[in-house]
Amino acid sequence: MAEHTPHATANMLGITPVTLRRWCAAHAAYLSPLANPPERGTARRFTGKDIEVLKHVQSLRAHGTTEAKINEQLRTLTFAEIDNSEQATDPVEAPQDAQNAQDRTDSALAVRVALDEFDAKLEASQRSREPSFFVGFGAGFIAALLFVIVIVLLAVLYGGFR
Image (cartoon, rainbow, N blue to C red; front, side, top):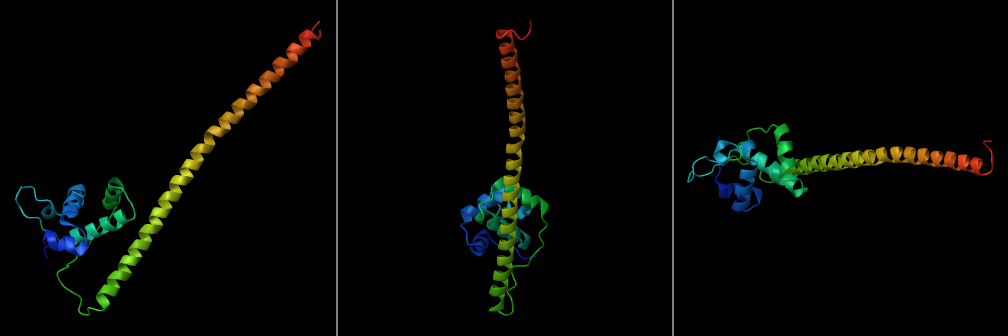
């Protein structure tokens, strides 16, 4: 299993080492113990699985997903151990394959985000309709009561109950 330094990992992800440390702290439960060493002064190291998790975090953050939502999603996912130390044999195909995989991942995440937004709007719409039924029923009841009171008053005034 290959281990990568924080600098090499940050370079792979295109982020700063400071951002990498912050992500490691925020998503520690989904990374190896090497990514968040318990002892101060122990160097961080990243496994292939850590890098895959961090790539997923990066993709979700690019779509504006909150840290809490990212952790919810990470809780439901399983990541394979990837050996990132070996390079592809064909340097021309590797970036294209990686780009295709990233495009598919981005598309899937965009669909999931859109479905989540649709679901939230649907729930909000259903909640907003519930009170309108009760308000309409209450207004109708009050209007009917006022009508009866007016009829009784008119009957009393004009001698209808003698």
